[in-house]
Image 1 (tube, rainbow over the protein chains, first blue to last red):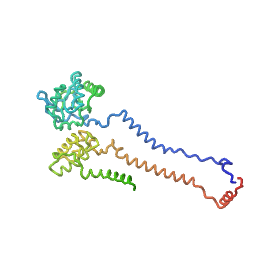
Image 2: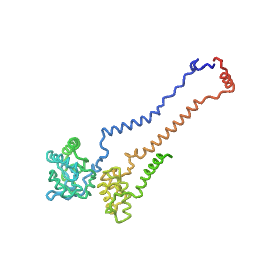
Image 3: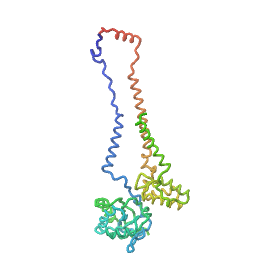
Image 4: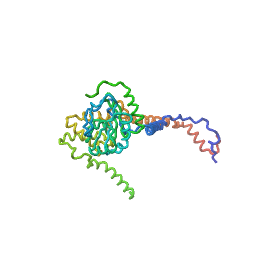
Length: 206
Length: 168
């Protein structure tokens, strides 16, 4: 009968230890880093589809907009200067524009901010009806039925609201309907800062 | 091939065919009233449009998209071409107003260098890793390959194995 030699004596030599395969952890580490980054963007990041304005830091576009109403002027580059001005892009067919309208009105009437309207890709009568229904807080309204002037302003989503500095430069743009939080966090601080800053002599863009 | 197998193959084939069919007879987003009279300019407009992003439906070009903005931008492209702009000038015109994101091909700048070189770097890292792993595997195999026994050792081994009652 064959006896089992292996069970009689213990191994003479200890098994050589394999070094820890650190390199094998690399894919896991890469994956976790990617997950961390993506998770952060998902939870805390801004919507990547919203683009910052390419006009920030530049003077307002040179194009002059004709009036929408017979009794209220349109606007052009010569109508900016002396104080911060908001340009609100709206249209009667735009549902979120309707939702933000009370806030625009509040900014114009209660907070004393000058707001120009840019009626974009709309029919004149529809826009006039919309304004008589919801109220007209705008100091000036530019009429851009074919949207060509809006392209000069880099408009792609409705509504959009631009903040123009007393020097006639685009300082900030918000795409989408404004909310009280956006007003509080984004617009008012910038407007206050612009109001406190030095006021240049004369209007810009002449 | 079983019937199920055949059906599956047919489905895959049709799916693959769907791609090229779009090129053969695509449903155009461009309207007849947009087309320029000058065919050279129109051809340039179409080529340019394919590289310009529709910002509303952001993964389509303005050539493909049915959105209002896409049509407006197509008209602007043609307007600039008729005015005599070069292809680069037309692109610069749009980038000035919408930013470089409006181009479907991202520019090669300090900000996008990782985007452009990323895949190549990854391929390099992957390739090196495979090389190192393969080298290490060869080394391990060499280390673990048993040493050849000498004739004397072979004889002794045979003797040990064939003798059932032998105690070590």
